Image (cartoon, rainbow, N blue to C red):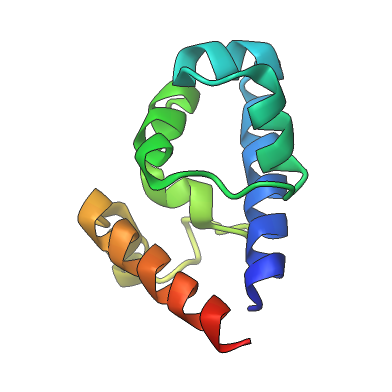
Length: 109
């Protein structure tokens, strides 16, 4: 997945989760501590989300961090349990490492 596509998919997923909770951009922004335009920029892939905001976003949406990065539907009944368990155990440090890898790939362009 190209970096631009990653940001686009993340933005779509963020919007999807936000709407599922019935939360406005303004409400999410307030809970995360950013301007409401920032949430709009994230959702429209104009600006990438900062790593420090990931846990705050997940907390505000009341979802585990990994759900922010699941860009496809997982049916827990049919999905591989090991895969779901792995996603549920991702730490902030591991997310930071993942983003560092993505940043390095951006430099290769």
